[in-house]
Image (tube, rainbow, N blue to C red; front, side):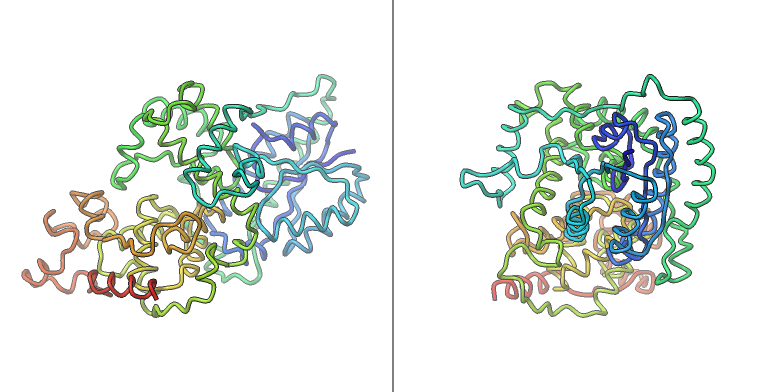
Length: 483
């Protein structure tokens, strides 16, 4: 008897643990939810709802292989270990198949299970190039992205990155196994109604209205959205991706974050359309592939530097920095009340939708860490608490990049000007007006910094005042970092 342990891999396509489980004649798949652990890791309610929907869809997929998906809820990873061991004992499981998770707590849990004597095999499936394979001439992890990318491309050219497709349905599978799995699915659906309930959460959090229904399931996405993006949009991605007022990005990050899609699948789909892409870095579509390589970069970093999971900056010189930012300024930032329209519109987009445009993530992170000198870890946590695509490695890497504390981060003296960013990437103020309707009557000329115009027109009460003045804040930031 074997068992498939489902974790952050809620898909059937390109799932090596599932493939091996099916080949071994597996009849059970186990998902052990950990609401308290999710709460400690600041996972957003909208993300948990997205996971719940895809877990149920995974259960439907598994029925064709005669595999029953069992859901058990415990509090945290310690109880998760005991639950898995007991399940294997009760069902006489001899081998467990699972896909790896790179974060520190997850790695400690998995090591404890192996040390306990449990026969478990882990597979690396959330990156395109396997961890530990992209190293410099000294055999160490790269600390700058560009040489990592060059080595990554060389490795992929030589070794490839094949996704393994769908598991083969067993030829001799009794119909009774399929029927039994389908019957259990109805019970599973009822169980998952309390999927993310945590005794430490407030009633408001547990009944959040910010659910994921606006995001289709991965099957529909792969059938309709992905082909449209790769056929019609990826060629102009470099020209459109920075403008939040238009739909120029892929919108695939939530699916990658929970493992509903694999990066290898997207890579193969892209290479199928543009076979020359791996050799031609100047091709227009390479800009999007570059984003997938950045994703691998951050995940490889965590593999080599587990301290990143412990709230530590990548650059040791920032380890004991005393951030002078005020709590009241941080709270105003979370509400979208900084007085800079693009920053405020971006934060309101996050609160309202559970997602934020990538260009705006850089703008608001720079504003919090440089203009307000607030500890980047507060922003990192706030993002995780609200993002449907909250992924630790990408979120941590992005925040440390903005705060100049990370690997290959922007120089400390680079401070985004939120007014110029607004003028460049939302020239007519369309995005700003969508999320700050009180500014809808402000002329385009003044929409990026409306305060002088509002004072002239006697409209000072329709929008919040400035938290800080840009020029003064920039000089303060440079002096602080230099010190």
